[in-house]
Structures are given as structure tokens and as C-alpha cells.
Image (cartoon, rainbow, N blue to C red; front, side, top):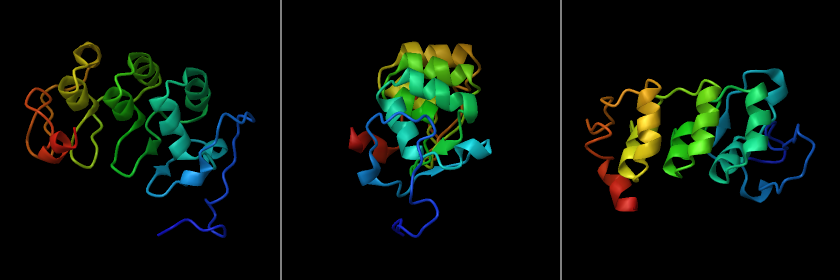
Length: 158
């Protein structure tokens, strides 16, 4: 279903007050945010993932002061930590971890942040996650650990 102007989540509110390049033309289709406080209920989860991909540490720090590190989930089931690891952003990973990100959260294919670190060549981040308690033997939907690979469809997308 497409978001419509009459839908309660259609109009987005930027609680930070800064206009840092809103991507509202892309909408939030397939993306949800589960706020941990009433202040965050209008936060656009797509914005959170944009900040993660573009290493917007100040914006993420403000967001994390109000919301759980795992509150935003994209249409593929990825958490901000998984997306940070897919992009090799060590600093963002450390920030999310400091704010309680679930190291072993998995997306709809069962892949964890560690699966992406080890298969995209970010072993330094992967080792950091393991040192902080990530389960390196957790398997994805195809029964593969982070050392064995990603799902076939993920590899075809590379």
C-alpha cells in the first residue's frame, strides 16, 4: 500500500529542527520505526537509514538519545547496525553498539551484521563485533554462519 496524504504517518516532522536534506520524495514505503518514546513517533525511519549510510554521527547521536538503536527496521528487516556493517562504517557501528544495538539481530534472510562484515571484507568491524559478544556461529536462513557466506540471492546481488 502506498502512503497517502490522509494517512497518519504521511506527514513527517523533523524534531531536530534542522533541514538537513529531507528525502521526503522517496517516502517511507516498506520502512517502519518503533519509537521507544513518544517524541520519536513521527521520526521517519528512512531518515535514520540515510544517516547511517552517510555517516551522519551528530544526527545519529541525537536520534539515539531519544530512541533505541534497534527501533528502525527497513523493508528487508535490516537494523541500523546491519546497514552500517553493509557499508563498512566502523564509527557508526561503534556508536550504535555504545547505544545498545543488538549484535545478533538478523534480517529477513537471517543474515546478521557479522554475516555482512565477514562477507563484504570488513573483518576489522567483524572482529570488533565478536569481541563485544556477537555470535559468530549464528546461522542465516540457509544455515550458513558468517564464515560460510550469505544467502545465494545476496551473493547474486553483489
